[in-house]
Image 1 (tube, helix red, strand yellow):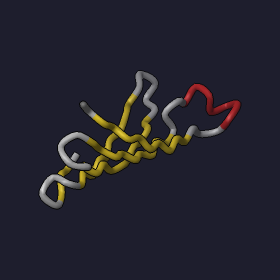
Image 2: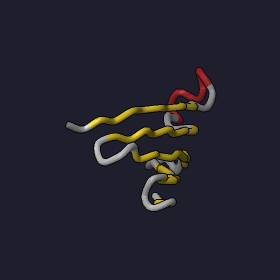
Image 3: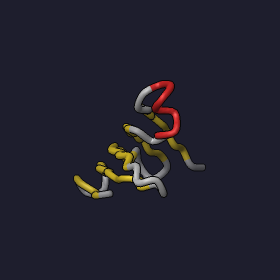
Image 4: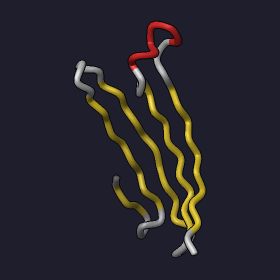
Amino acid sequence: EHALFNRALYLRAGATFDTRGEVSGTAGFGIALGARGSLDAAYQHGMFPEIKPEFGKAKAYTVSLGISF
């Protein structure tokens, strides 16, 4: 995770390695909405290699809104 623009925008990237040697990647960003909120978006590729034979590589797009009070 890397903060940009006075900690208003966060860029994220990562990878997961499982015990069978499979590698899955992630990327996304977050936007700070003041002191009590955030908006996040992410992409995941190949996170569940066990379903690959039936469905192909898994892909997930995620958007979330967080509010604390």
